[in-house]
Amino acid sequence: MQKKVNYTIAIAVIAVALSANPVLAICQSTLFNPINDVCWQCIFPFRLGNITIASSGIDSPSDNVGNPLCICGAGKVIGLKASFFEPARVEETVKDPYCFNLIGAELTNPADGFLMGTSREGDTVKDMTFQQVHHFLFNVWALLELFMDVPCLEQSGIDVAYITEIDPTWNDNLLAFILNPEALLFGNPIAQMSCMMDSVASTIGVPLSPLFWCVGSWGPAYPLAGHVNNGYYVQDNALLAGRMIYKMSREGLMWDTAVNECAPTPMPIWIKEHYRMQMMKPVADYTCHPIGRSGLIWAAEKNPPYGTGTNASGNFDWLTFRKKLCCIGWDWSGGIGY
Image (cartoon, rainbow, N blue to C red; front, side):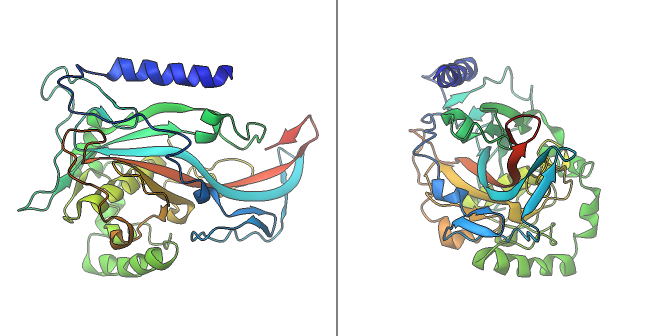
């Protein structure tokens, strides 16, 4: 109970610290609801060893588990491999810089141009979209104090971990090459044609992770910056959220939790099938989708013209479910392990 109170106070403090004058505020949104706003079926399937304990109609990659037994901690922990999807991060794509849509607050820019540039929605001439993105630590189970005795689950609650307004590599495509110089290899028709296979795969099942330069039907993964020229606004925001996941992986700020059952693993080249996304705002989508699934299936009426009302259009929150592979067993040094 004490932890719940602490998390509530923390959210309130963040909101007050970031809020501008509510009368003049551009960013108006309701506070997230960690119970009703989360697609709970998206955590499935849950597999223990080679057995599926709880299945789901949502497409999921195979665990490729040969031996269901696992040994971790230099032999201290012996148990069974378990896998599921953990709601752990939120990628927030906003047209209004410094708008923290998830908590319904905003940060006042001291002066125009003091931090990084502005965002804008799709242009009817150029069909260009540029959004700022905020990366939140958002462990729903920790907020609700569920499954806290499972050691492989992250114990942190909610925090703002990264904002692109102060990141020059997000605001400039040329500077983004500092993080992704290999983009030069994939800026050609042959490499981009191969993305058609990833588009089909992500739409009917799960994406093709070997084609890491593709984001299915959403567009190219490179550059790891905030500009998109596709002209499909909701899907373009999903693409930017996907790029942010890749960017965090490239910078070593988001480790893959499904490669090694004993510990998270840094992956500078992302494994797309280990992630799925659910739209929380401005319109809740009560299901989730693999990276790259065509917006023709799920994006209709997800950005209604609310103007400056509650959950204003153009500011999106994407809950990221990451695949977890754990070794659940007995730690001989004391208690349940990993």
